[in-house]
Image 1 (tube, rainbow, N blue to C red):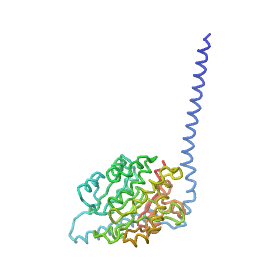
Image 2: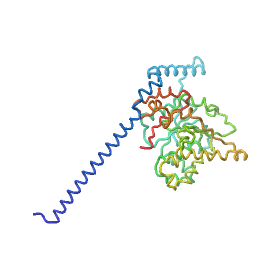
Image 3: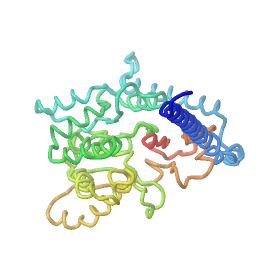
Length: 360
């Protein structure tokens, strides 16, 4: 017969083993339920898609693909005509440079034009859709443009090198998405150009709509551009997925940084990134900026903001667009189709597919 201490040890092992099995089964259940909820219950919002798309009279994908090819051929013909009828020059897109190269240009005293597209990704290669959408920016522009894909490491170097007063706050933010939100304002302040989230794509040629993107001569008034989505009363109505700046050092772009500096220790603003560094914070900064417009003009400071209307930058709203548009434009919809989504928004300058990858 085993001693009492041995029986107790064996009993403890059995209890530990049973608890391990229980926790393992519980974990597997939670994972399975979460997957089920995401893949099946979430798709419940798309149950009426076939009917909604039919009622909206959305053309077939094949027809839209044919029209898209014709449009591209016409655009290429116009480009060659502008160069000369006999030109064999192949249109090239924006030239990609690294964030380090861009910062080195500034260090050497060069003043980059606002013809820069900025995007950001943590590290490693871009996932499938993001790579294609990123390429669409480069392909829609010519080689007078630069394209920069910022990485997390680059972002910190930018703050450390040019905005050291904000470095402590930047490093103290709870997650990388907060830092990515914060630093995009610095792209605009230090370099100008366009910032676009990786799920935001150009529809057509954006410089045709914003004059500072077409002509090298800067205007007398420094301009910042943002987009509007949905009802103005909605706290997310000025997303930070698109930004544009006609030149360097527009003072507005420091407002969101000051906002973070003021509130980063306040629990009310730290529950989700939207309130501290994202759309809710950006909207608050715009409203505050608008209050001081007359005072700035009286002081001879001419730097303004234009919030572009709904149909231009964010024509597809993830919270109040028609159901047919949600069926066609949400990437997790089984009916997602880029050509049909673009057809549904004929006045769009850009489109955002709202992947919301920061939440995963």
